[in-house]
Length: 262
Image 1 (tube, helix red, strand yellow):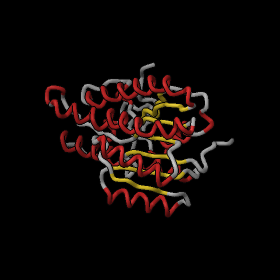
Image 2 (cartoon, helix red, strand yellow):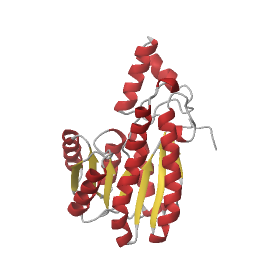
Image 3 (spheres, rainbow, N blue to C red):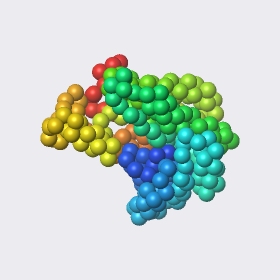
């Protein structure tokens, strides 16, 4: 089947590690020129070197704090200028503090909103003019299952991801007239450095072996294991391609059966 991906350009936020880097690598292997942004320049340079060592595509990097509108504007302009535009945007930046509701401060909530939801809003706002001029594009939001299936221990991320999915569906209706298709991916438990930190933290807090902590965390995942970043990337590749030409405003769950809601 024809994907239409070779020769396209993509910007992946949070693309220096974890799921974001896996997404950038997967797109690059399909012949997509890649721009990645993150706050840390060293990790960006490492990710760029890794992509270049495995592919022949162009790679552009731009350090940016996506909570800062000026840095976002500069970053998007730099990536678009170096790569000649942006055809695909993957909003992947963001993390949140978890814990009992009573222990979460206003700053915990506001930082989560600013880094996850508002970062996606800011980057999308800067990228859209390039796609509108080209009369086409793909925007993919990376959220998480707590946006669909709330967790009492992860309220900030759940609330923000629910907002991200609402943003996805509303924006999709607005920009589809420009042949810009907006969708979201909702990963479950994915084996990344952050997930490994979660396992270690739970083992320490409960004074149990890491293996037991891992089993406890995965107890409600029917497939019985954590996913891989590559498995999430496969879905993003599909949504970014011509194969998903009739998908608009969808939230695709990739969680091994963990989410029980309809």
